[in-house]
Image (cartoon, rainbow, N blue to C red; front, side, top):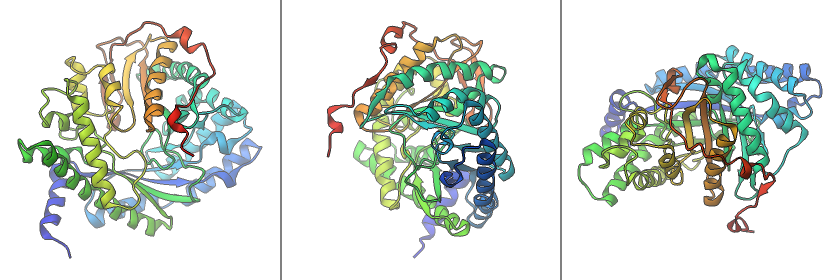
Length: 452
């Protein structure tokens, strides 16, 4: 039976606390589109994507009106193109990226994910060709997103892939230098990547998924921040319970939308990703949640503990609300997309070292961080290796999305616009890890990977 207080509370969350469905993402398998001929492959994937997701945007709009719940983004993810594209040349993979972009334009979606590879244990010829194509592909398209999984707890860390990603990120930055190196904002490097993540830039359609699937990402940092503010000076157990109950309500709303989208689009319901995904909007910040717990500023000593409590409570509340929670599910800390994080960096409270510590207890990793444009590739590789090792050692997903903003130095700002926001360029330790990175090969998997 519906409780009117719950109904009214949800309406208030939407109207006053920035509660929304951040994305409905349709995952589409391209394995049946495989062809040795690039033109044929592109024709087949364009036809399949535009047919499967033909009604995605219209359906999202209809559900938004039906329930009065804002649905911010409609997106598509596809089978990792290095797998589906197989033997294509780098030029062939660029052609595929342009086809994906054209399909996204036809559908009216804002991003399409899956231009990536899974190379945690080594490379195929197709993997190498796709990696070589990433800089041109991202520079010549507007909506294509790329992810590369370089490590897993089972496989260890492919340091040859890490070394390649440093150069690729630098190349992406240069090719999009006239737009504050925005190409790097569409490229993420993962450890333990989930195959059902609806959020960009890391979304792709895993090979164990059905032919098509509906995954929904919810978001409500403002709702959680308001609940904590109302709670006042309670103890930590009470605070955790408040966050759990709030996360439950947010996730139930996401599941409602997911089931309705699944029914209307005739695609199975996959998962609800209950991540707290912030935006640059006032009142929609994960950093402000942490400050609401009692920190003077995000980045102060105690920040990691506060984030650990938040992340755990969000997950516990979410799993009670849905039988199919997946993706990343937790608290995101992307600097450029979070007004509180931006402020904390600007005043010197939040450093990249503190952000790295925070990633040990939350979702994703070093996300949407602008760094000086002259940062050497080997330093970027070191950042990736450090962050990825946290994921491997802790059996969790971690990732790196850094933007070496061409021509910018520490203290400058970069502007991306929209949900990507803006960010202060962060200062780095530029002592070189080049000799370490150059060793190559694979860092072995940790002992606790042996669970069979």
